[in-house]
Length: 333
Image: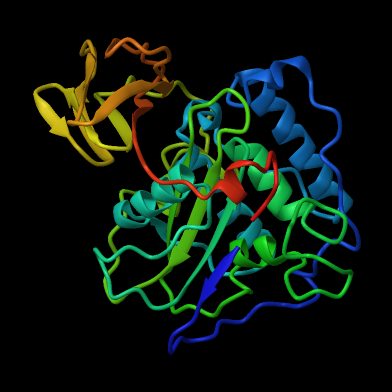
């Protein structure tokens, strides 16, 4: 957990609503499917545990969009964070920012808390989290197993200021930032202990490739996909397909003759055959796909269900790591 504070505006939070859990709520014994933390079985199990923890705190189950398990980790983390903020009556994070996501990707590679990037600023303060797990398990640990006796290395005693610090970053309580706030988030590709990171900051301009409003339109928070109420009639077939690409590391993904070197969105006519081609930059290798694509073949033709496709391409290269962090399994920092 890392915090940075400049001259910022405070926003109202109800202390009673956003109080820390009275004690850690352990994740519990993981199913065999969590040998790969990004597997559907493991993600569904982890969401079940998130719902149980929510219930223990007197809150309803997380109202996730139906497409949640097909979304990239950055979108999943934004949705979870904003659902918690809404439940605690805290202003939601506006959306995901490319520069902050690149900073989170660097945090994953270097196994430590992300720092604000030089691009896209000036950034007006920040809070950041890192954990040596996949994204959903990391979120659980940050929110529900972050007190004394947990893997939080900043919580050295029951009264240490670092206890529940990761949770306070997510809820916007650890540092006061002006609204609208932006997030960057990323996870690694290893089956176990992949590493995940997020950073929340703000600046004078709002630039986002995926917003909380987008998530609401997809059904987050209990809204009907498309932003309207269910009428009971059949929905018209989609007229276009939206392809959301998240790129971790350095490389290019070609989709419909458009080259994406950072996270991007491409819209195609309905019925199109989507082909994604990954090309690593010099010094990098293609590590694999996640989301709608899987495996390590550079070419992928994802199946289209509905009108949304989300995929993440990960390019691996050489980057420095801090050995003290790299040697810690499942520690939260």
